[in-house]
Length: 483
Image (tube, rainbow, N blue to C red; front, side, top):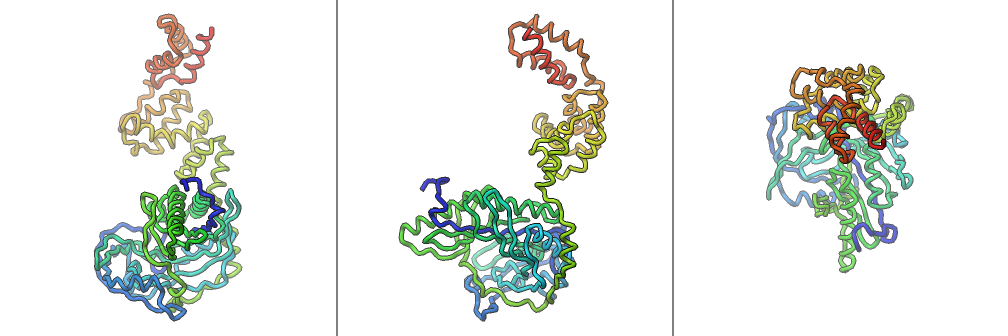
């Protein structure tokens, strides 16, 4: 079957997502900061073994990892970690700020928050948790995500502690960095309402947007992870981990479908397993699929009651979704959807709004372009580091434009000078009078008759670089060429 030509309904495609997002602030069970900078000055090693879960059995995936008999080496910065991460001290009371953020996300997903939160221990013996387990708790059920192909259900929303980061491994050891261990992590699991590979990508994107709308999530590589659970008729449920880019989701899903179809055609049995999403959009085996035997009660953390007043307080202060913010900016300032999206995503709405209010002779789209795009153009056109341009520089240059002291074309020239640390000389870009410009164009049409409009345009722009609005030139050229 050709790629991109899969009939997902015909093959019995079932797919759900698990989204894991780090929350900012403090760690979940101690006062250590999230992502503080510091030199790794703590080192120790351990061996970890699996224990029986709540069912009295040792989990299949845990037994698989334990058989490897590896030792685990740990390193971390003392500014990021404490005895809780080293499993030398019981967990502190849960981080209420992180819990409230997770509950806010649950309410944004229209989920039903549980009356009482009970933390469980989830057996993890690959070394990524020093204790040999991860603390996790169900906080809400029965949410929904509105997509272009209908609602996708959200059966469970959990809050848990982030695992350590693997940095090195050999035949008999694995080394982890503990700096991210214990970061609050919200886990959102969808139902199998996802229709196809592109729908999975869309759904993951909407969840990410909702998470970012709280303003309380960690940003950057590794701060959010998407796992895909899928199966087809005659195949087996497979969990694919390791997605860092939403664009990879459809390609990896289609590869996994085709991998299972090939095995089915060859008459081979397909086992339930966890696989890794590779950079070339293939998948590779990681471990057997874990089961329910890995969970058992956490005895160090008392139940947390969630009252009706708690929910009403959070529900009355829900943040506006990013999509709504974009729509508001687009309508209020008559901007394109792309510019409005950039203003929100680059977190420059306050600066933009201030400049629009201050400079009523400059169109909002020109101000948006100046803030968002001109620094990039300076870097590509002139090879200048535009990182030195400040908001004060932009405000000063726009004040010249607002007062009619310079044309729009001079904005990039002046900001390029600001990036180089030069004093801004506005006199060099004083606008050319209409009479002078018109006379120049009429003479050029006589002296160099027969050229194209673009050729004349280039010649005039070259002579009056940064002094003349290109639209003025084009209007005059069209006027006299037609005559």
